[in-house]
Image (cartoon, rainbow, N blue to C red; front, side, top):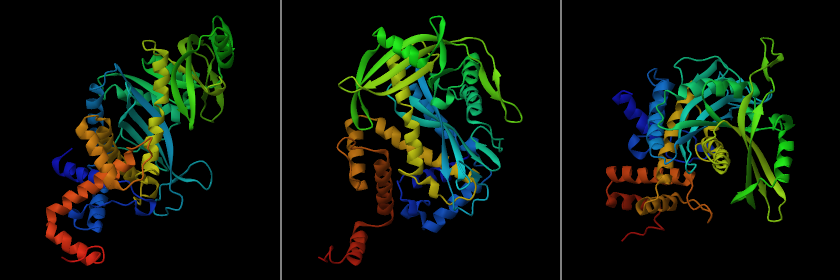
Length: 428
């Protein structure tokens, strides 16, 4: 990234170090920017600049990902894939909106691959991003609009691309239940990728016979194969987690669609997989939740596999932070999917910088976090005294303080306070 473009990029990242309300989701200028209009115009020029392509803007994020992955104690890194809609119904200035779930639901669709630390589950950096609109997919993998493909058809190209991201750890691709597709599991394994997906109650070959996963679970329960691993919280309820594992073989044919959209069967070779079953039970042993996990990762414990899937929710928290819990992306006024995608990458860097601060556990960093939360003015729960949105607000206020002190003296600020709130700031 050239120096002038990089300087503008860093200014925009600073402007996104803030959690905003839906009615104030524009570029949040610092005082030294001159005025809010000037900051907005500078942002508009940046997002329109042909040199600020998506492949260019994702480079700083990947550089951070490479650096922090190298610091992990784990030999693996998790790359979590997920999709989320960006609802822009009523944004008449956006001419490339596409229909989402129904005739009244218009906007864009966001695809993200988020790097997560496999040792302690911290989000590290988005490594790839795409925004699908009426004209196609605007992706970090190309500076040209690409044709839109189905969700699972996007995964293998990103798996292959991740080999060029120079990550110093073995990638495990973590995907939710949507990825329970025999055809895709075979394709990913054949191409040499490690994956972890949640399965439905499908049929697998278990000890020589075809059985549903629920039948396999019942058999393992009879054999008392489940082992207690940890106490967990599940939707506000206290629970106890149990894990069991076994080897299964995928023998069923997969499904595909022809050019007319009709489904047909696609046979494939047997695929040996590891089934990890996770159960959460209450103190009386009543089942609260259960997950069937399929993976071709054999070298780590079943307990660790369960944790890896639990950490998949980090990407949902990231999407929530972008959309409603911090940066209000669904209120942004940029007029195209490309501009929205560029701004998402800039906002993502602001999130990455806050995540870096949250991962630090030195006395100085903890004091800094407490200060930022305090100046943010946020009311915090005792169970969660530090949150990403609160830190975003605190950092923006800190940057504002520093910027103000560079332009005004303390005596000037006191005079402004006496003018603004004379009853609270009496003279003398």
